[in-house]
Length: 274
Image (tube, rainbow, N blue to C red; front, side, top):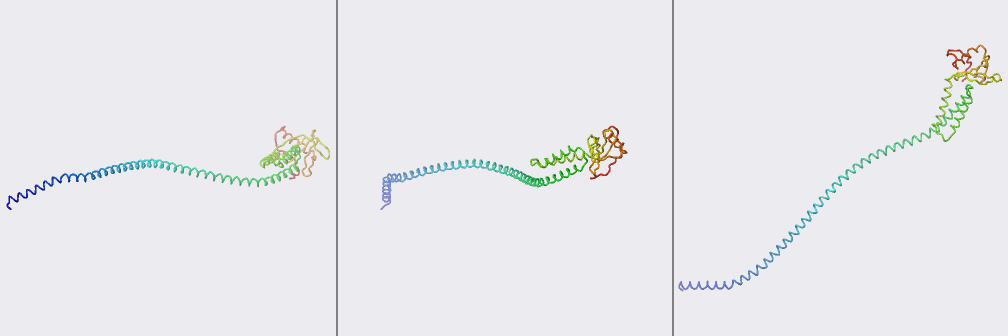
């Protein structure tokens, strides 16, 4: 076959291929269309799902952030409450400590008061016995003392006995009354006085001026000054003294009544019985 013939043959084959390609092109296009349509549809579905998931993620993130913001605010509020509660606990603990100290002090005071009460009950019994003993001694002293202000002193002793026997009076009041009586009796020893009175001398009543020198001695003188005497503690009787003592006894009475200046005198005291 000559070259021109070969060329024509090749050209004819190319033409047939081209013609066949033209016939197949619509088919290829249809096939490509059929393949591209599901791919595009799948891509659209993937995009929608991605957008949906993205939207869901954003919503979850917003919800999470809102929760975090709420928790942060709640945490701050709880932190404030915690600090406040802690401060209150410290304050209350301090107050409790002060109250406990005060309660302990009150307990100690109550214990001391109970001790004093018990001691006072014991002392009350002891004091009552002591007061009775002192009253008995005072009664004995008055009975054996010089015979002056007899009614006044006996009334005082009777009142003291009533006070000591009273169950309603406190020991302190009884002690006060007894000390007052003892003070009065003690003051008698510091005074000098002249009082008129009636005495019994040798079995006969005599009206006389009576000189008391403290609780040391007593002298008497008749109104006309003719007779003088003294109280004899040994015999517990009034006796008459010799006339030589008339002047000194009269002078002593004048000094006691402030009718003459005070001066030293020598009185016949006799025997002093105590």
